[in-house]
Image (cartoon, rainbow, N blue to C red; front, side):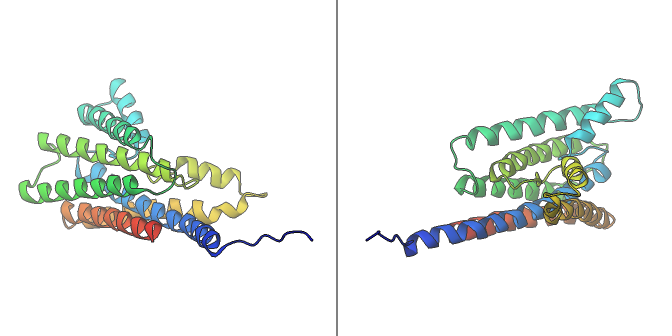
Length: 235
């Protein structure tokens, strides 16, 4: 008589949350994408035309500056690029032995990002930095480090088409796969683009009031992502 194997309750309990975690990770990475839109609006409009997360824009502007275009903040652009690379490198090394998906190290790094953004917002509240002040270069560089850490962390979580810091590749995939078997992936790609847009709009709106609330919003969103991701995965 053939032996019938049945899945144990423990096996079912392990497999069912896995699917839920993938959905949760998608939602959390989309939230970080919104936060990135806020951060980049602050960097570009509030801190002298420097992106702290979208390094493509910085590379293009740095190239224009090197070719003789005037009134571009060459030093800040270069520092932001270096800061982003340093942040991504540090996070990548720390995550090298971490398991794929969400781990305690993921939570710790995103918590650090939220903390860095919070400190920068409080610093701006206290000193009232003008975009041309040297302190602005320090702030944009530190924010770029934080965004590099976030990008490397999101890379380990590995939600397809949601890098949290850029939407060019997402737009390409959205258009290229608009028909055929991959068309259903628009459900994650379109929200990523929309949330980056909404984040930039929210950041710009808050900048009309003050630069600090915009950074505080980004810090709160990132901290919330870290807490929810940790609790859901560990739960």
